[in-house]
Length: 196
Ligand code: B4P
Image 1 (cartoon, protein in one colour):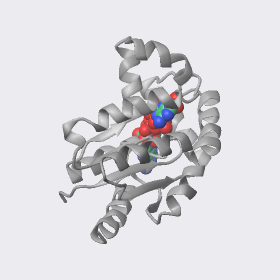
Image 2 (image 1 turned 120 degrees about the horizontal axis):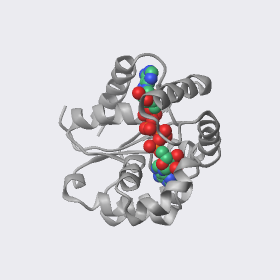
Image 3 (image 1 turned 90 degrees about the horizontal axis):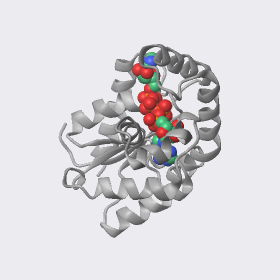
């Protein structure tokens, strides 16, 4: 499958966004752009940006919209994203969604689909606790994981209605194996992208 596609993947922390984003991007030959990965890389490299955001991320808080919007606009302006991209973990607030709309409108393009990964809260918490043992991410303690779920419910869930009204949301059951979830996404995306 090689097609131009402008996509988002949304879902609660631990739903499998990063895991699935890599696969989908590879299948469609588009870059997967994860704001979480961009921030973590900057923290690791101890850049100015990394120093500004590390406390917020480790506490499970969102990075300010203005800063995040600037980073994404810059990344989307790079040549590999010209014909398509999969944004993973962005937008996370209504303000970010508005900024993305404005950015895409200025390029006279629009989103093709929003993949919404749905998963049971207790199951995602146990996935993230397992990742904590494997990777030791500072924001994967139980207290911070629960806080990130609340932040998602308050700040990010409203985006589902916003995109739902545009008829571009693909609801995907995120429970089951990685391969099972990937197969559901592929089927839904084939249907949606085939409509264009
Ligand atoms: P993210 O990096 O986006 O972190 P996340 O929501 O936890 O998702 P992640 O991709 O890591 O996990 P996934 O569900 O794939 O953000 C981290 C922080 O950065 C945020 O809290 C915030 O502070 C900041 N940030 C990022 N974007 C921002 C924005 N736009 N605005 C402001 N701040 C922002 O997977 C989780 C685990 O589940 C993995 O270990 C995986 O192996 C496992 N898994 C996946 N699928 C599975 C399956 N089917 N079965 C079992 N396990 C599975």
